[in-house]
Image (cartoon, rainbow, N blue to C red):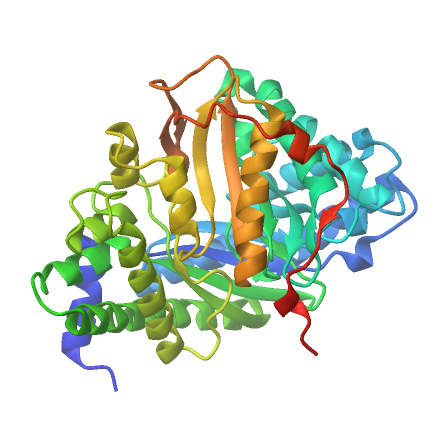
Length: 454
């Protein structure tokens, strides 16, 4: 039974500690939209989205008002479009047309982002996959609300290095195509290894082929709440610190479960998962870096940072699992540089480097996220960064990702302003030594020996 103290505690977390429901995301299968005619496919997609998600935004707003819980984003994830367009898309321009349809429909529905302009190429690249990948620079330049992802590896399949090489080139082209907008196209494009199929978080969201026709997933965020909680156990043992984080994550997850079940009920669709991710915002006091520093690290990136992040990630997941039987997605801690005021400050003073971030990705929930690098960085170097992250994911059986912005015309010491939840990104240095010969070998890196489990 909920008592009055718990009600006051939750109200305080919302009003003072930036607790919110980061997203209510509706997953929609588009397999019944497939046609051999491009115009028919586009119209089928539009009608399916309007029919299923027509009340998504208004329902989420109503729940937010009635329960007093801020719901920041309303989003949609869809079946990877390379599967849907295989019968009707014969050029990259055909995929651009589908992307424009998705963008216009998302705006009509009042959702913030639509994810699933995606391809799964961990084992190989089909003709349809290649066309979608080649369409990305133009598709992301002429649209606003569509997010794209490409999964280039997995523990079971290894790393498709041909896809890694191609994505380095595509990221460079996307940056150039959106150079007048601080390379915004790259902020909507993520390269993954071991992508989950139940992830409501952009930019890597898509609806997996194992999912139901329509499903509601909710992502909850609460770095500010956790920061406030750990401030009360300064100087105490790791046991006390772990219990505090775990109990706080439990409370945050319960809020998400309440919103998710109510949204699914009102919309008449299946409830999927709660993604409990400590995903920061640019707001002061809503930072994962601040949590790490609150544990006793002088500046995020200093020795001890990776251990602190590992502790945080594990306890968040344990608390979430205690609170709900349907925790999934990428639950844990996110470390996107541009979206976290503490990470930005640490990067600007030199405490946080790409190399240290890479080490941190071994224990966090995603990977190198929202990192601006000099525009002169070569496509091969970007591919090398992707390959390194994919290798961490493949060997450790975890999801890793790269969302990186090679900012045209800018160098170390500059910064870009992306606005909103995407925040501000300082341009960070990368190694001046190259890897082009390695990236150009062709083929795949085989799956690790421990992948063979039946």
